[in-house]
Image (cartoon, rainbow, N blue to C red; front, side, top):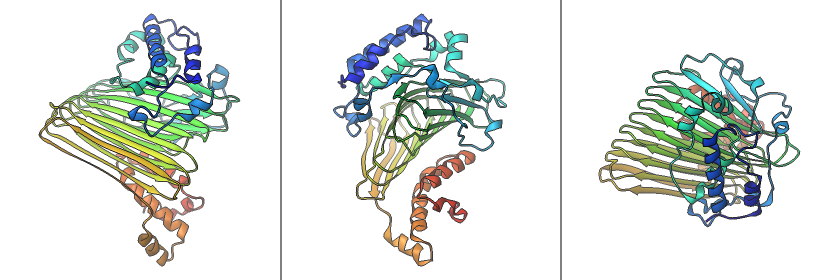
Length: 451
């Protein structure tokens, strides 16, 4: 069971399935889904460390802060510019949300090929509700910790939809920016995203969560992904929320025969963040690459929880997470690989490494292999340590200042994870985000960007 705190009751009391501000408020089937979601959330409450999947993460911000539903005024907060991870944002497709509200004025259509539909959830519910009904709510799993998914289902107030028809390949990355902050009171919003790729389709999606200004906010995001036979989705995410932000993200993925799902998450901000990814490899030859990096300082808390379920023969997965923790920050990595009896010939690899820059930093790691098949090749490993003093001495003996030498070692440490990003343009953008996180002045040294 979860925790029936005052915040749980507040979310339940604020619920109204027919509130005009909610997308699709006039759709009876969506009203039924919302009501079932709030009922389940009311029964479960917020997850607590009493649940195994939440053993190392406590939702303190949701216990000591009362969040109000987002308003249209909050979504129209004035911003000077829209941050972009990729160069030339004016020429590539981009959607923008501010405090959970879509901002069509910042929408860049770009040059999308025929058969690609990148839209706001509200528009899809308005114009093609039958398609939405067939795809919303197909999440798998029934764990008690999924109460936050139930809350999102009840309160979903924004989000985007990407549909790529069979055989269509999108050459350039599609960027979706979520901007939080700039409110006078704590607010909560609940994006619901859908990504559906037809047979043989290919696409790259870059999601950028960024905080601006001041103001506490709670973002509870759910993304549902279906990847058709022989299709490929590159799904990249940067979480750079503000120090007052709570970022909870759940992603569920279905991968068909011979399809590929590549995921990379970079977490570099937020008072508390949790990225939960669950992948089902449902067809023979399906592959999942779940990778990420986390860089925390101060009292920030980051949780990466993953589950890859092999359901068919000859499926493969590769999972590499690397993190750097400083000050009193804390991180959690829980990685679970399940190989069902039918998934003979499975090949899975999982690795988590963390670098501690201070004695006050802490990492909790729980790698798991659950294997029911006989013919498999699976491995996992986890290590934690400090900067190699011998390597540091070597660099300093070559005339490199200590601060720069430490940054070189951190960058080299994270390189193995960043190399898992197959899209070169995105990999360079993520590397720049890492360099800017490192102590001031050092990232300006061009000579060590390519180390």
